Length: 395
Image 1 (tube, rainbow, N blue to C red):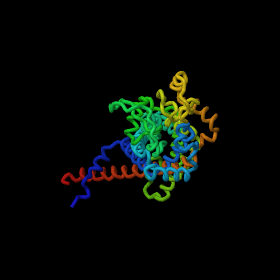
Image 2 (tube, one colour):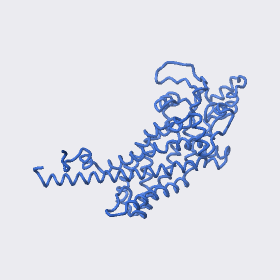
Image 3 (cartoon, one colour):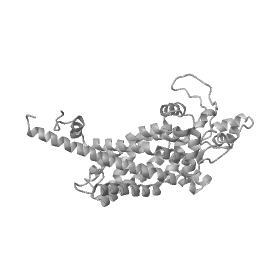
Image 4 (cartoon, one colour):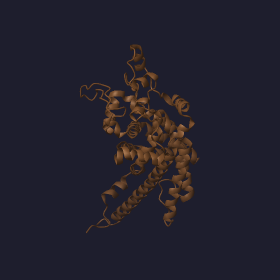
């Protein structure tokens, strides 16, 4: 029979673990859970955001239709019909690989920054605001390559594998050789996407959309100070702090739920356009000579070539090969979208985004708060057992 006063392995770890380790583990668990639960909604949102940037060649593969995704249910039906359950969870691998380090880094640096900034600033809102910025910048830079891969996997359509467009002859099988492309989107898995992006577009392709992603720090700068303020008002406890002994459990968790929902709605409404710009930059392939008609690369010559027009003069071919990406930087992307699609394009998929982002934030924060509570309780039990052993040396 096991002695109830004997320390378990988990309790031994919890006693010696730091608050940073607690935050990292709880954040990783929260992000992982959220990613798995809301992946289908993330796929739908990404499809809606990215479809305005399809080139003529992509429209040709779609039967001449420039717009195939309409709303949450309409987009879901199209994905389910064409790709099934697998299509609804396209990009789940990068989500899991991305959310684990993203939230682990974020919560760790956020709480450390609050402690450090609190030494110089007494205003809690200012401390929370700048802590969010520092934590967001750190996690964004560290995990941007994963999110680029995730966005590309989610944006592609599974049926493209049946449309063969050979853009390069098959060469050697070395990892650095440019792969044979079967369509504008040609990624079979996370590792396959990473290999092909590196070999055909270079290391910079992994940092596409980094600038608007950093601009998106305004999102967390709104969300988490608002969450901290609302949770304190609703529950009387700060983020990551367990409820007071004797406090109504249901009221405490309802307060966390309400703070999560309200803070996410506020942040998403205020900062959504940057997500559309980031998605367009991430889903656009970097230019390679002879491939200018592919996703996100404009020009009349490209459209003519993709539609099977007559052969072009050498000068025109060279001009086509020198074409630059359709989207170049945040400002140029903003102007291009505004000119071609109007201001409404900046809110494409916003309804779906709300239906994805709000549950995602809610699951993340509820899981984070629960994990922090369990870890702190485990530490407390371990310390009680350790104290008992010290008081009873013959134990």
